[in-house]
Image 1: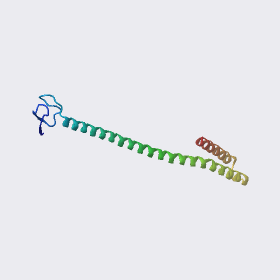
Image 2: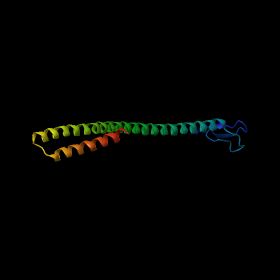
Image 3: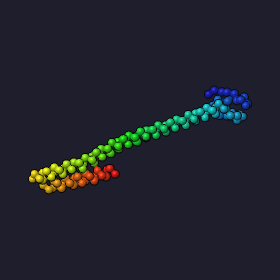
Image 4: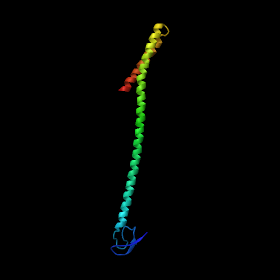
Amino acid sequence: MALMECYECEAEISDKALSCPHCGAPNNKAIEQQEIRQNISDVEKKLKSLVTKEKEIESQKSDAKRLQSTLGLLCIGALLLPLCGMVAIVISIVMLLDGRGGLGNLLVSILFTAIGSTIWMASMS
């Protein structure tokens, strides 16, 4: 702590004192330094807040990419399900005509295709 002379009453005062304890004259240098410290503190708080928000945004972007990938896979799966069902129907008809399969195979294939088509239609809307 350094001492300085008050510009008003010429008493020795601390350079950190906001005003002269003798006459009350403001110490402009100390006031300016205090304002600068407060401004620095405010900027640091804002910077920390921005960094936190940036991390939240990056996390949300990552979650969105993951969701997009999952939805893409679901759409592909929903598209393949009715196609596989249609193939199963054809195979069941061929087996039924050859006498190797029963009507149950055909009914299961039709049900499989209907369920797959319903899921596919729902995923596209």
